[in-house]
Length: 354
Image 1 (cartoon, rainbow, N blue to C red):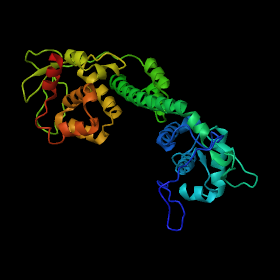
Image 2: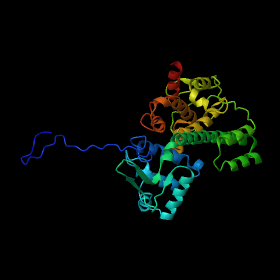
Image 3: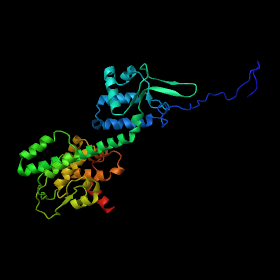
């Protein structure tokens, strides 16, 4: 109390309204997390990435995204928006499509329908604190969050592994056809590769392919001239069998140095790297796995040559933990401002000595 007004009414100090939590509130009304949106978007991305395994289409994910957008911090995980508002926020889909999407999500236990007697969506509370909510509850989605995120990670791992194995398989096919020509077996494999396969399928095809003797490669000079493609040519002068000299610095690097230094790149190889051809073929697959645009990689090979571009891929993958954006860095050191001063052979020597 802080005195009285002239008419005798008391003056109240610190007049502020406080929201007192109601006892007996249903868990569906108040989520365990203060802000359900903080994790809902992570879960939504997981559902989007794993939708093929879950049996969902892009429209289902779009409808789920519209539902999540209606959640408010501290207001629980029940969606009270009408079908008309959901259709509008889901990109203007019709109501029949919305109902099919809701039914599909409910079948997969990603949401729970809490229907009211008249079909409306709302929340009611009584004076004693008890309440009831009628709407679309996303509590099952949050309950399965950990499983959905793990499933999405598995899909991403399989995609990366499959893409790398597919590149290795194509390189192996090319080497076999260079020696024996195209056969019925290689033609059948290329036909199978027109569709996406699981990593185990790629491994099975690799195991079924006949082995090809490793090529005896001669030393190749790394050119400084832009646009020149390096080929393995015989040379009369005495040089190390597996070394590649760098024109800019005069230093050389060998296959043994690459294998001993670039552990990350070698770990992705399905077989031993016995020649520079193996290095070039393996680097082509690794560049796609690292997110390097194929057109950028082709330009880099035309400017630097296949061996120097391949060595650059190996080195950047080894240094991946220290590089924020691998594709951008690769373009910078091969085609950008750093291209003139970047020497992959010298960098390999420094890494080997370290």
